[in-house]
Image (cartoon, rainbow, N blue to C red; front, side, top):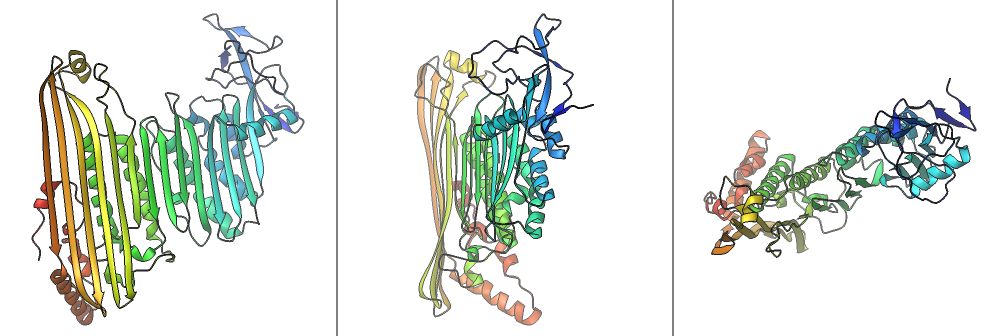
Length: 527
């Protein structure tokens, strides 16, 4: 039978035995903890603890586990299972969903819970466990925090904290009582919250935001998720997601580098129809892939940017009120636009020095891309809309001089090429109206690439070549759009059917962002 003491549950001893770690002097604590099943904690058991020897002669100690509050909920079970693992993904497995579901189950009342390992023979008190749980939540080695504000102003803060000693969670609700609709809304986020935690704790990390990126504005006005986790090699990975009525921001920083994405969501009238947005997303994803291929960037970092771009833009499938800037007053104003919210994004890969004989030859990958839109005019009938898209890539990498030779051997023998990439691209579109009559429609695309390659044989410079390419195209699209608008008018009059979007699909390559000069040369002639 499981013993109960002072409002806490002492779980039965775990069947695995643990190696006793080396003695490390630490400050006195109310509870002298010992690590979970596969984590070494710098502290020895007390003399009265029961010890045995393994087959290798190492002193081992059976472990027991104590909950801060006596409970048999699914959350407590997840804590007891998770604390027995060393990998952070296993420790947090199911905890995020269980925490949200327990908050919903208890009607939105605040609570805390924690679990700690202790050596057979020691007896923690309820007061000691509460103190240690609070300390872990305030000073975690690994942590996940989720904060939400409801449309009515109530704030919700969820915390998952972990270190070698144990696991702790908390749910805090302030500023009001959660309604049944808000509780149901929280319940619907549980699986997505857990998927986000699971994805970030994988190696390499993945981005799985789900419904966290598509909050219902009728229920929630803002969300922030902050995560700090140790990766498999012990280096930290930090993640920050923030959503409100004016912005969607995401940043991820880890051993491989940094990924940033910031969407300006103040003006929903910038947004096009679903097909237009999907075409723009597809084109941007192609540009990201092209940059990775040309600059030999980290595929996992680029995948994270692609996932972030798709998932944060998916929130625009939900109708949202327009606020802030001068609105684009007519739906047809968006025909030369991407149909997406304005944004800025970047990848900055951790630099490397693979060649010790030439330390200035750094391998790196830095990519930035952005979109900005301006609407102006003295009156709605006399308005102008301009959208600018631009991208920049700077990168450098080494390759072996001989295909059959590994790069490590090539650098050892100093038979290699050092590539330096410097690319820029942009696209600018403009529409202007005079007394509601379209008088200007234009697009300018530009792409320039330069690659410098230095070739070394047995350490001696053999060649230093630069290959620049640049193309710029300007198009007057007034005749094209005037014709398309007339076809649209006739179709709506005669058949009640809109054909504008279908006609635009085959034309968008004339104003979308394109980083490859060769692709610009292949653009279709103006129709």
